[in-house]
Image (tube, rainbow, N blue to C red; front, side, top):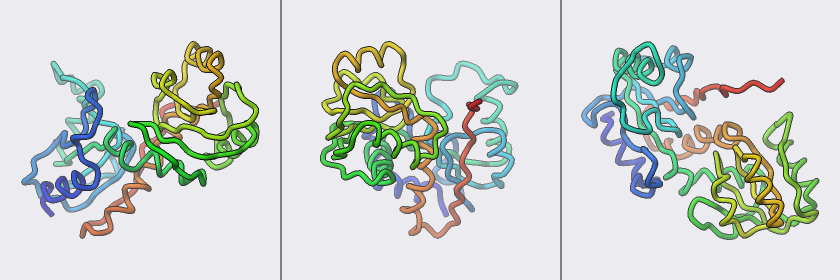
Length: 239
């Protein structure tokens, strides 16, 4: 199957034009004339993943491997070392980042938690919860299978919560809810949130976005190629 056909299908599913201005989603490696024999879905690309991927494949990731301008390619260092391997194996790359957050992933994560989405404002969705904060935190911990959970408790009762997968700390000042679920919250962001009566539950960057392959796979059944969910590994370990 031609790469261009797959790209057009993905663009119709989750338009690349809707990505954030700082993002770099789209076709990053390869040509639309390339013939693709297999598709791999992953949050990121790492060395272990590339060892699994066969030649003439397409990898669709959530996070773009190339985020900003590359001034040199040092094949001994990331990301050039991965780009070299991909070119050698004729592997193409499409990334669906903030455009897919907007169209699918945020809502999919809410559905995993069993929450009803009541509105969407940009890259933030709002859900009706109606739970004590402690019960909500335990529910999130259980569903996401998290051993540890960072929280900032400002309210005992949570009527509505906001969700942004990945890293949403910079959006705290815009949140109009009782609780905000996202990842990578910083110390001063937690102080700001508590003072503004906004509870925080850090659901982790990797942990909240690892559902990308599972979610996208639901929409690739119409493509006559095998789609393999082969997620990258969390670079962090918890001890």
